[in-house]
Amino acid sequence: MKVLVTGHKGYIGTVLVPKLVALGYDVKGLDSDLFADCTFGTEVQEIPWIKKDIRDVTSEDVKGVDAIIHLAGLSNDPLGDLDPNLTYAINYQASVKLAKLAKEAGVSRFIFSSSCSNYGAGGEDLLTENSAFNPVTPYGRSKVMVEQDVSPMAGPTFSPVFLRNATVYGVSPRLRFDLVLNNLVAWAFTSGRVFIKSDGSPWRPIVHVEDVAQAFIAVLHAPRESVHNQAFNVGDTKENYRVRELADMVKATVPGCHIEYAKDAGPDKRCYRVDCQKILGMVAEFAPQWTAAKGAKELYDAYKETGLRLEEFEGIRYKRIDHIKDLIESGRLDRTLRWNKVQAISDHQERACA
Image (cartoon, rainbow, N blue to C red):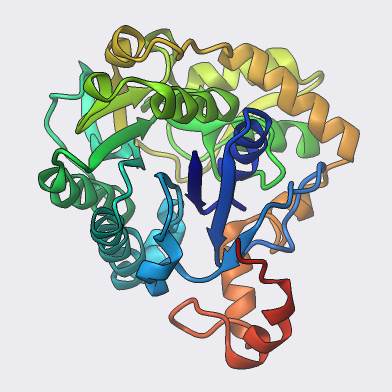
């Protein structure tokens, strides 16, 4: 089976791709590679890939593909807020365009990386896939809009699936430090402070990046009738925590640290708990292996091994919004987040099309 993974050089993609390759899939990637200078620890596994912005995908890029795992997009709220119009163009319009091209090309399965951010200001209730959407950021709204536009495309030859990932954590070659558990452990290790920017009350469902990768593989393997045009919350219902509970976990993991709240800390509108029973009941191969406590220890060990410093994870190398701003200010990216012509020419030789 030939699988196209968009965003294959990102946080989830760099964990997922080696697993797909090991299982014998013929994997091709598509990525603009905005974070080429941000690799953490292990090098990214190389596969045949197209260096291209997801907005510029053509029918030729999806020709001969059996399944698409669509991860590409602006991946957090600060990036989404940089220019909401760009977020909608990249995360929403380009995703819908890709789905249309896929359907026209005869791609049978389209697995979209959605998000539990769809629920946004979800409150205290345990939310299922049938719960109302209530996104509070451009990122969350863009995910909702993709689901709403792609779902009606489903048909006998085109089967979309929507994986609403909980907040992801864990080590990856393209590690993200803006995610709550990754961030708290990084603060604790580099400064001795478990630094909380909210009042600690918001709920977050969390899931390890390895378990997310396994969810995509499990859906790829699943019988069509089990997953066709379905949305699934990806995680473990037991892994819903208040941010302050995660902070306590980090304090117990990282020696000598203490919890500290930002001076302007207040409640966060993003507050949601999710029920993940549906995917466990309908997708046979999915069984989460990680817990937050185990993940906090993994992160601490990884930071210790690499000698992570505060100025690194809070600086332009790893802080995604600052990295993008630096690429723009240096002239490597234009304001639409496309590589400029000089950069495109210098990168031309890196492209390896399947």
